Length: 304
Length: 284
Image 1 (tube, helix red, strand yellow):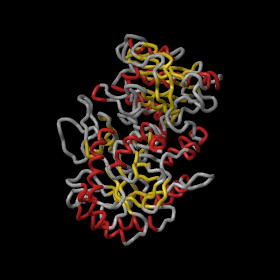
Image 2: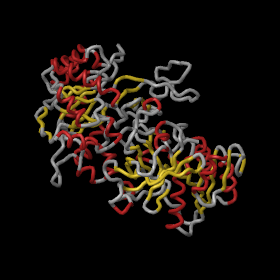
Image 3: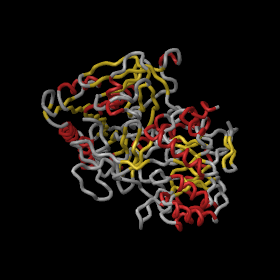
Image 4: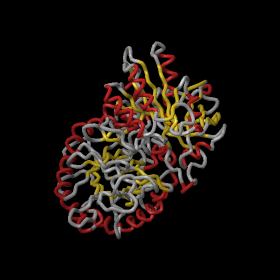
């Protein structure tokens, strides 16, 4: 089941969703056994921003029917910290040492403007350890309040800017929180993207249980009942969104000719096969890894 | 904490078999071992230290309960190791714990672990004050067992607080506990932190080991900080994965930023915390 993706040869079509598997922490917990049975054919980093971020105040999680809302807030060490501290460790654990096949490293970056994306992409382009770059375009435009990736025109403009800065594969992580995801996919392709990945989490929120105070909305709104999440809103993932993911991947596949990384609620090889059958080239596993860290390997074996 | 202490869990969850479930007042003690036929009942490579935890989920009917939950596994301290069995202390407080409380001998149990950093033994000459509240007494039982076997010269005192008589029955999990109840139905009528203050007054040359509701842990943190006594607090936080992947289980760190309870804890030196967050405790 080896597969070619944007010029990269992968052992199988299963990778991780950005921000759902901290390989550095997992290696501390599980030791060398993680490397012997690494669950993903390529490894996607969590989102890196120019400046360090501490993330949102807790609570950050809310369990829903067959799903999870997270409001993590993209904690990361910032671009310099990532390049200095995390990338060497990630490169070591994804390298082909001691008989293992190398696992291509995909770095996910998010900027608030085309200029920020440019600095992030240029920095990634300069590092040989990075095989491909994924753009998280779910950051709100400070002027419009809309996610950059929700507006096809704005998305294409960002892509045109960063496309000139790297010959490495550029993957655009599309947001599902938009009127027409396939129009955004087409805009990414026309802007020069090599692939698109979808779906990101669906915007969602939860109220504190009656009688319990919790975090207040980050927008400062005061309501009778507090929002549960410290960040106010979050993103829904897990089996609850699987059918939405299948529809959106199928819709984008009819509009673009570049490869697609499909994801959303995948728990089994059958779910992964569904996404492959509607046009995905790779499938990413995210929330299921929280339930079982070896889920990616299990799903890949099931596809073989 | 050493790397040797950190890398202990096999990669991936494993299948355990429930060997029994015992009523202990308001609580249940869930006993489980490795699937029969491998490792003589003992779980292969499973050597949890006091304070470490596991992510548990029933193999059957994990989901479809109240509100179509549970979905994610739930974190539980290992309460005791005995005759190849691992014990976990449960209180029915929601759809996850309710499903686990329904398990019967022979049922399958997914377990990921042991996870996290546990308790460190007291430094030379200090006595150990074990302070627990509610279902949070669980990791203190294995700590008491381990201190008795590995550090027999350490003097150990156990102070436990509960809401009422039904919950105070949980004190039987440990030996020789002094008990406080909120309603005065058993033992001292008041807070376990009052008993701790008296113990510290009597002999401050101690290390405090604590697990329980957030309010209790914050009281202990403040008391120990004031008395310059080292305190190791076992925290709890809503957690999706248990191995550092989800970044959901954070508590604010003194001086800024956050700690992940799963990989930086769950046992955290109280000096690392400005205060114990209201979401970082066990069910009362």
